[in-house]
Image (cartoon, rainbow, N blue to C red; front, top):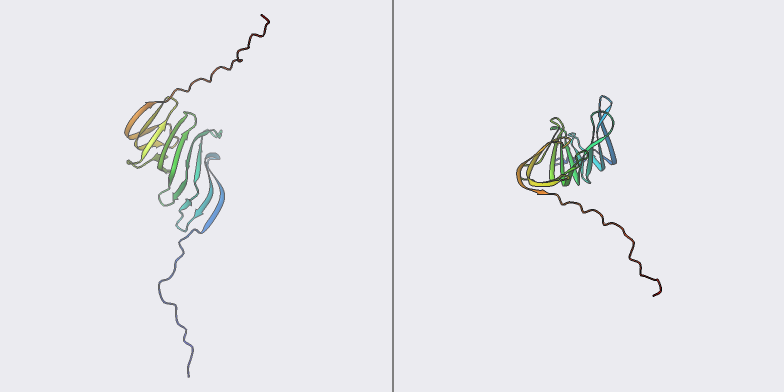
Length: 183
């Protein structure tokens, strides 16, 4: 008699490592004691089994005042973002910009880390940064700052330059009139 032998599949097991969930047009609000701390917006969010979250199409994080009045203190934007769940660390890459709204300060770089536990924003010491204020702009490598970007330190400063003065708009005057009186 000849029987059917069931052969077990051989070879390595395939394990899915992609996202467990994808969400579009994301708006995440984070509060503490019924006060809005920050909001995160992104066109696409991918959540993974280990708790990590990717924002492959960019992200914006808006921080609010601690008094509960919903005043914007600063914003972080980037073309790519990742949340490392194990480290409670946000990683942002590509045209990263931090703006402190009340102090009119802006920082630009290509990679930035936000440590939520320490309320600290920082870059690698080899990462070029440019900070622009109403009166000057500073360049250098590496940066550490508090999360609202009101205090910061450039690790290896390269230059401090006066911000170009904004020229006042020219006064609007009527064009000269031709003398049309008979002579």
